[in-house]
Length: 278
Image 1 (tube, rainbow, N blue to C red):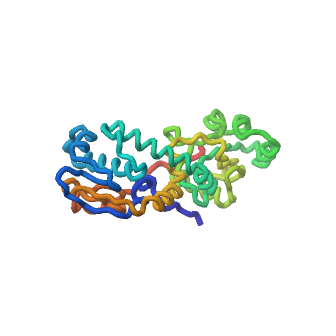
Image 2: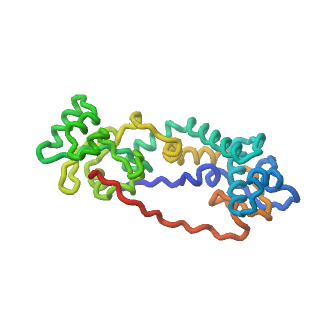
């Protein structure tokens, strides 16, 4: 059975981290985190004097994230400074939990939120066993794809399977389900090529080794989310967070400042086109 990771990236910095929250209506205080106070004037500067409630609450959420994670509210005068500080905080956490991200990725079909796949669809004149033997003898997957791939696009890319917008590491549920089922039946693991049948065509596939990947920070964040969230939960569970009732309420479960009295937002399914190998 495929194991699903439970922590969403959107909940990473705050929702998994802070347990103490309340509303406060101090005259010139927008929010306070562990004694660090944000005035209404400072919040107005961060939002460039916006009167849009959603923008104000989103900005305040980011300020709470940054201050609670770094325990530092200094120098947060503009929205650009706030965004830069958040990226710095996340980068520090990513550097700390990079090994955990590798371990999560190497769960492959048994739990990784991302799959990075290479594939060589074969014509009927080439046996998958022949390609597997060459790979075992030291031929690189990219060279084998250029030699044997019946799909010109995959031959040109060295077998790299990409989404329509060029992304190489893709959520498992965005792939053709028949492909995922075939990989599972073959017992595919990261780093070990397998030969499968897909729509009656033999395909040599590889869940790419971690050390061959070039991951974006967003992808590293997704892979490390559970471990980062657990560490943040341990470190910041007792954080004192107050928000002015005139602005909204701190929703611990969502990790957001929400409009006072607002009900939790509905989560809508996202529909994507399956990724196929040709």
